[in-house]
Image 1: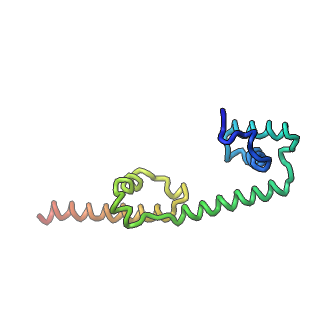
Image 2 (image 1 turned 90 degrees about the horizontal axis):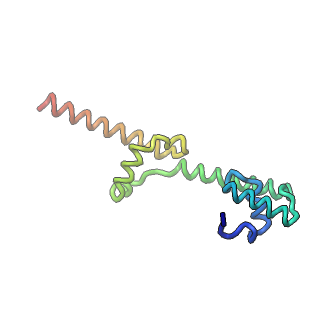
Image 3 (image 1 turned 45 degrees about the vertical axis):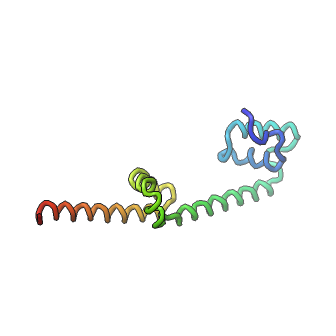
Amino acid sequence: MEFKPPISARETDDLIRIANFPDNWNPLAVEQAKKELLIRNVPIDYENKKVAVLNRYDQKRKEIAAKRRAREAFEWHDFMFDFHHVLLEMLCDWDMKKNGYITKHRQRKYTLSIISLLILIIYVYWNFIK
């Protein structure tokens, strides 16, 4: 498999990042990066300080992404201009909270509760008052 840019053309720091964080990369890329580091006579855990910095950077990036997901919300214009997408997401995506979309999960819960209440009121009105 050929990657863009090719693994052999990447800088040593990129190869170290690929080799030390295999969960973030394609397994073939990890294997090629390790082979390329051996060709360049660079140990995989080269400069443990650099690996530690990269690890902290990666952890911080994940934390920021998680916070961003937690704050992401449906906007009023989403309901106006992209209603089908919002409706499908609200009805079909039951893993919002598990995936970190805390605000969207809360909005979905309230919206579905209000819709259920409206349907109940309409049903009662239609069958008992009319």
